[in-house]
Image (tube, rainbow, N blue to C red):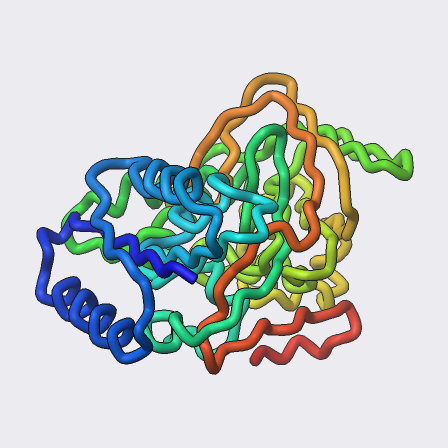
Length: 318
């Protein structure tokens, strides 16, 4: 197997990155591995590098990238359903929500744990012609992501704080999005929703458990659609949405539509912003399909997949 470590030089080869490079070289030399260290040069360069390496070699390859949820999405879209390619991530984003689907997330930053880790085949969501690894958000959550991206550029606003501030700012703006959700069993929901989250994984927004029953290997999409509600109702119920306990909250479930399906479709009156793994795209309609076990993701040694919660759980968190 060939190992590739894809690093981002934005910090100007900082002491932390130099330390990581030393750790990579030492760990690979210790195991006598064939490896490359690649520093990206611009947006999209990680995709170009992965595609080129796949083109020139049919050998099994493992790509470990430093980045956030957007980086995982980028590399997933390079080679879905390719059995000879494995992808891992060393989290460095603002939310790092995807790795929350695993135990002992601190091990994702350990080079030796990444090298010694096992690749697990996990599901992907296909939305039109692109893929989603973790979650798609439409409506309020998507508006928050856009606002948080703006706030992160301000001094003294940390990445974690930017999402909370984004929620507060968005609450004072008009919200409610007309959507038509069409299920294969004939059910159609055609109304205004505050938000809709479609989860392969469970978390978004730096720890909001929007899809508590989602599991990366169950072959299902986890859908949470919240009816158009008042700000007052939203504020009362937001804690159960953040904690992922809304499935056990009778008041919350009166205004939440929760389904688990392998395929469905959404249509909008006009093109809307859609948040795919934290990256904003636009669409007037989206066809969602789960692609079972299409992505070989490296689970660092010592980590395991977290199992999902169900409607019968008592709401306790791990």
